[in-house]
Length: 116
Image (cartoon, rainbow, N blue to C red; front, side):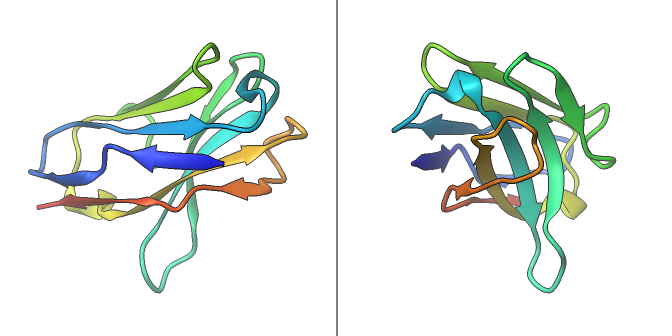
């Protein structure tokens, strides 16, 4: 189970720190990803972190967002800085149990981020 939190409303230029708590499996052996989606548009990969700590960022996130993981607490922490209106979306946490960051079989319910 994946449960996101930390979303909300923020002014342009501000920051938000989200979190995704994983339960029911060992998060350290999975690839964890952070995605976002705006109604009418395709889902976009924001960031992902492999079980060895290797991180990958989507184009819109580079230089502004960071992702970290606390393996002891099975929690993912996306940090979003310099937010703008185009970052307004529903943000989802996902897990790929195979570790390849290609097949995300587990998804959270999402948390809304609104930038104005």
